[in-house]
Length: 316
Ligand SMILES: [Zn+2]
Image 1 (cartoon, rainbow, N blue to C red):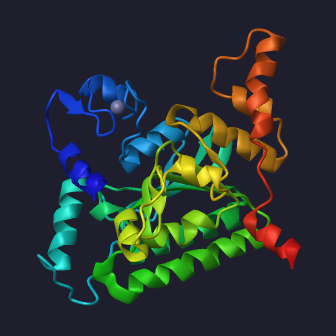
Image 2: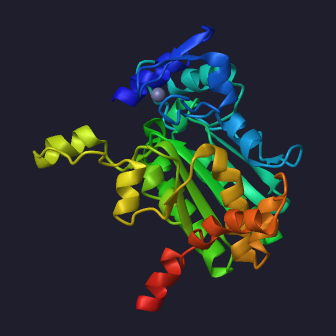
């Protein structure tokens, strides 16, 4: 798929310039990084490494990482182009991460949260035993502290090197999130480019509020597989955030530079705090009442809908 090829190119070290995969414009790398990997020309959101995502989202120095040492083992003695065990150690060396997810406690504009951030740089953000376990442990932490849980997804799907064990993580993470829902705690899923396969089909889609970054590819099977199977041309924008918002699959699209504010607002609504105060947390406070009103207006639209789970309970 095009985005897979592009991600490989994008990860090449060095180089002062980078070409935007969406508009083809050459971007000055420093400026591009300063914009948190968003194209200054067309607004295309590139994949953001997990650690950068954490730094961009939570309050400075508030992040305390959980279960950092959890690492996958090669239970199936799996081989493809190289043994899974070797692939794991090479990827760990290259990325400095143990697996494809970072979890921890933090605050967002002063609101305490538990966050889980997937890292596409680690084997395409694939979900194996560690991702499933760390999501479940993050849920348990949220239950213990009674804090909202925010999950940033970025994944090619289940990690096939772990066979059925990777697929079992779908049930496991959904079971954990159900407990969070029963405890009346908020869960927010932020789907970023790309969120596909078993991740879309499990924890990324069952949270109370589903947010996506603009233009993100979100789906189960890839568009080419679907087109070949149904033997039909797919509609324009198929499986992209805007297409999914239009059809009710996600609740809203939030650009990367507005994500922190939006999360703080949603948490404020869910926890009964004043959303305007929550918005102003680490932001230059509005000078006049008019500006406060302007700031507050999008929050009205941001009012989280009833969770899918509570809706289905009510329908029964
Ligand atoms: Zn562009």
